[in-house]
Image 1 (cartoon, each protein chain N blue to C red):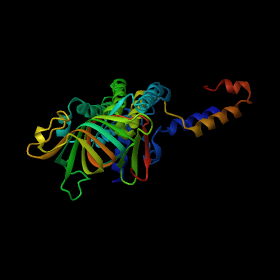
Image 2: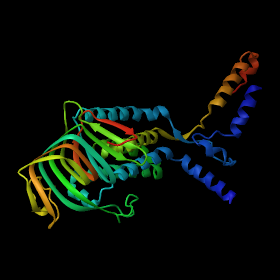
Image 3: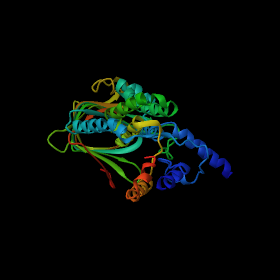
Image 4: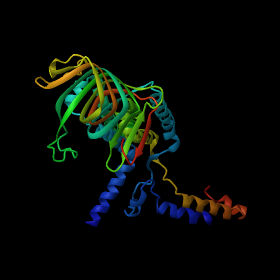
Length: 232
Length: 152
């Protein structure tokens, strides 16, 4: 009878859900449990659909510049370029960045990188491009190519390289870094370090190689996120 | 020793069958990935203040939810909901959710944890289902009294 020939093998070799290629190797023990937990797709979809909707919503809000996102990157060098940066409340001082113990990015630097810390209280950027080298490929984030500019508050960057055509207003050069006041409490460095500060700053064709950006709350209108072979 | 390895594999599979393994693993990995893209020194975090702490808090919550879903599957609904919320929150606080990768992994992992149910019937693979369908078709033209005995 058809049914008996059908049922017997199904009891004998239990198909293992989700085991993949390694499932064929292990011999099936006689007393192995035939009932086991698994994912019910319809049930997972109950959570997946709203989660996907919220993800899309967040991305759209960010791309419209309505939602500020925060960057805190450290230890990986990344490049920031912009055709124009206008900032109010600018401070800059030297410093040493310490990498995490045994960081693979340390190389022969002993885990320390000499950096210039720039703090801008309020910054507006045109055609921001940010790229992170992920080894072989670059993650490219571009924004602010339309009418609305990228804005960032308390933008603190530790750069190893900084270039551009800069114009400062009311600049004070040679202050002790601990006495800076124009960029707020975050724009204050350690005692005894050379520094400079200015009321406003305008940098054209900005190009920075950074080791850390912290507490930069960015509003990124026209956000585009993609992988690319070349950086900014 | 091959015997030991087979025993280990069988034990691992038994352990895995009782918990939302892939979902918990993905959620844990997602938290680790977001943390990896941050790794700012603690000094910087304190300097930044509340916002900087949130950037670390959310991936840590993701990581813990993933681990807890593995060791304590009975509370998986709670962990998966907290996990998905934390994953979504990292978009704002932690480098666009670890440059999107951690956010997506975390959401997928949370959904898998959410959709997981213990003690299910073994899944029938497609070949077996097709075979059964064919058997049913060939069985159809049979005399009635034979089909009546079939345990549906």
